[in-house]
Length: 125
Length: 361
Image 1 (cartoon, helix red, strand yellow):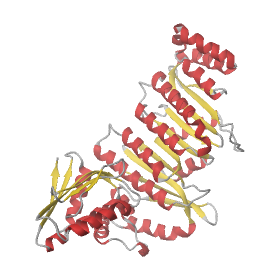
Image 2 (image 1 turned 30 degrees about the vertical axis):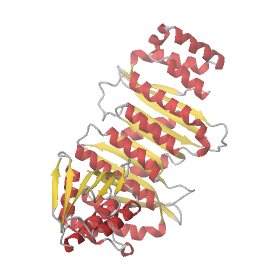
Image 3 (image 1 turned 90 degrees about the vertical axis):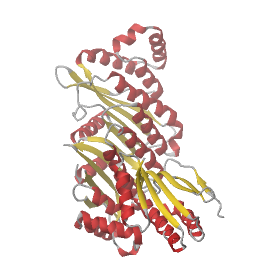
Image 4 (image 1 turned 45 degrees about the vertical axis):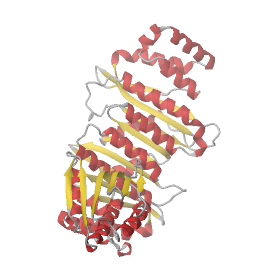
């Protein structure tokens, strides 16, 4: 099994927990890097490995306050990578959490949902 | 706010290596961020001044918060409180402008005239006298602060008090902190310059202005300050302003022309007739202009549905960076603005031009 990822959130980078053993996957906080690739490429590599032998059911949680456009592309890449799980016969779902009064993050979630082939739940928390 | 406004500010502040101005209500969070911003942006040669400068900024800022008689004046008023810090050559300037009621003018005037004539020893004596004698303090409305400012800067405190109407006067003051270990051939800034800038800020309904080096590190405190300062606004507006700034400032930090080892730029936030205006300006290499202009014209030619489609396409498929097509940041900016993105390029030399951009929402 892949080693779990546990990154603490900072002012401009998100917290990340990818824990296959506990079957818990979440990216949270604020994401503002000038070049999203530096932070996300290792995560994408990890996911690339994970989708080869995923858990029976994977739920990827996003709980974001804000992210810039360089990150939007990276988040999409991550979601596209997760789509590979479907071909293994396992299940996968995206849960996009937003605080009830945060229309901007809600709209961003709707946008990502519209371009994704995955079950995609928008959840007000 | 137009591109001309941005250009005018950049021009007026052309000798400033750091410049920050703020107009509106004065809270401690704005102060904390302003001091952080200036400290982070100070060149190494001025490192020794850091603590003194923070102290002077705090004194000046709190002087406004404490003593300004502006409770009846709305924020949109041309006379609302003003605070600025700037660095030109080897000198840092801390400028304040605020309304005071006319009955305080003569004692304020006398007090400042007095501290401006005293030598070091006399100042120390006065300081001790004020510390132990409360009466003097109450009379003047401002006591130890001014004495401390003069002691810390070892110079004079240029000030001016201009009558506005029967009730109020505008009180301008400039604290000047010189770094004696740095040589400079720059023309020193005068109080008149500060008054001119205050008028420019007020006339253009500017809430915040920052000129300096726009690196990723420098952008952080700016964003936190804007965020902090917007706490009383609707979350949606707050996020939009924030979003604009992130994209625009990162754009400056990435693509601006490096002149004298610096990615110099300016940004302004204004509020007029219920709309927020954001303007930015920076140098750009001339050979990059045709491509960049093409991108701006592309996003300006699309309607919102087309922008959304393009954005989603690039999200999923990525963009061929050689294609000359606009990136996600610019598309996003275009679909969030009320109108088109307004921009201009003004040639400076054969190598580079001044680029400015304004959006409103």
